[in-house]
Length: 326
Image (tube, rainbow, N blue to C red; front, side, top):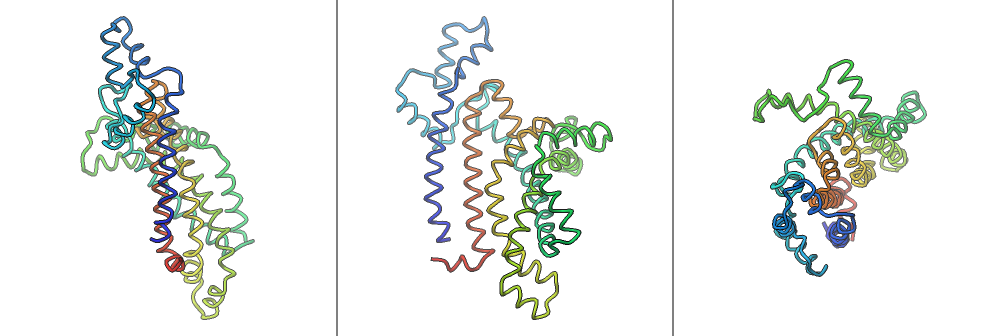
């Protein structure tokens, strides 16, 4: 916790920088949300209507510093503005609905990939140079190199269109009403399989590669040699002594990969029409819905910083040496 407390200051500075950039970037883009709303109104865009839209979206003539103060007040009260695309819904309402599906998709893919990648990496390091290692390690490099869009289109065509094993779009059957029952849960599960399989190859490859490299260095430590000399089983030495300490770089890599995971989820959600943050960001970009874009970028920044801070805390539980660090 002492280590995490010191790092908290670094995260606070990074968050402050992200807030400032999140305020500046949309104002450097051509056009405004008002222009998009006026274009949607067409002939109905009377001077009074245009003025009302300007007031509603905060597009009033005032110094940039005052606009920034109003922006900070909005953040403090969770008021991120009103969506242009989904007017009159607020940005918080739009992102709140999409965030649930993206969290479900990303967390499921990470847990699934972490379990497989860590085991494959540990076994590859334990049997370094063997047949298992010579097959799995190059395959992991291939999985890391393939772009998510290729995997998404391939899984969509093979398992969704050709074989028709899984649904090809949406988060659940549109004919169902959301409810806490097995029918709805089964539909959500079936619709999530292809998106999860699309996100998983990259994650599995990264976890396997990182785990293997870390595990090889751990296996040369004295305490691992002592565990072997005591006659402990291979599984006990491999996972109890080796894999546990080798997990630290894997967790670090996971926190650093969150940006790539969100990037992959954007492509995946667009291909499968999955109603998460990726599809929302794409729709908002097409509609020039700058309030939603601005809110989503801030949300992704908070998610990345929060994940890194959580990893710092988990470090102390995985490696007891860090708990005694000064």
